[in-house]
Amino acid sequence: MSALIARAEARSPETGLGERIAENQRRVFQIAYSVLGNAADAEDVAQEAFLRACQKSALLRDTEKFRGWVNRIVFRLALNRKRGHWRRLARDTAWQMNETPTMVDGAKDAEQQVMLDRLRREIERLPGKLRSVLQLSIVEEMEAADVGAVLGIPAGTVRSRLHTARKLLLDAMK
Amino acid sequence: MKNACERWKDPLREAALTGTTPKDLEEHLRSCAKCSAELDEERARAARLDALLPLVARGAEPSADFRARVVAGAEAAREGKRARPWQAWALAGAAAVVLVIGVVMYRRTTQTISFSVSELAAAQKLAEWRAPSDGLLATPGQEILRTMPRLGESYLHVPVKTDEEE
Image (cartoon, rainbow over all chains, first blue to last red; front, side):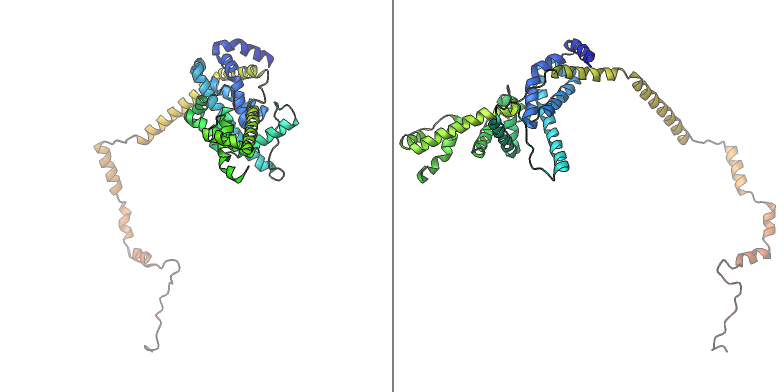
């Protein structure tokens, strides 16, 4: 496997994939993570998004187009994975659980962990339109225009939905 | 918060979230210590929320070898495609065979049969031909055969005499 990785790395400048991954991997991973709340799943989804991009060589050459495309595709893939996850969870463990505890790696202490878990639950309770905007807006380097491009809405709508979402969360987190 | 201050509840939350205080609220805050305290509290909660929100997305990082794994995955997929050229040839061959068989079958079913005039006359003559022994069959025996009762019918037609006839 390591030989394959070395050979692939050596070839990546000619395909442009390595460069595109380096530029986008952090943001793409975070989009998936904000939806899924799980690092392993987020990495799977991010990987799938990049592999799909490989099939579009023209896309790999255009940095800006690639950025918009990969943002959209990873968000869709993450939502699909999440729907599948909830379906499986409901089917397999309906007898024992209502909510899954999430492990947030960035939490500094137990109290923050508890707060984050609660915040995640409150985000899940938000209406879908507000939740999508919030999940994308909290990702680094995602401006209102970028979020709007992913969701197909104007930047102004993104800002107003984000404001409403924060207001609802502020009430919920009292 | 006093009951009179209830109407400032929403503006207070807005002010905490946006960081801007409208003039009428500012005037009220000067005269109301409770609402001032409420605003400070709302601002603190908004700050906590804004500090916590990024962690929902930025709490984790992709693993160190993520890029290498994706590149390797893409390369493996590309090599897999390249390593199976025989599949394309096999598919093309199969398609060609199916096409040839289809064409042959189609031609067979749509082929028109043409006959010459003399052949048609001979065929008609053959259809109209009757054997000389056909005449022999026109005997009384034929009538017996024609009137023979069928299965389930009675051979005997014994007339039943009714009471009135007697």
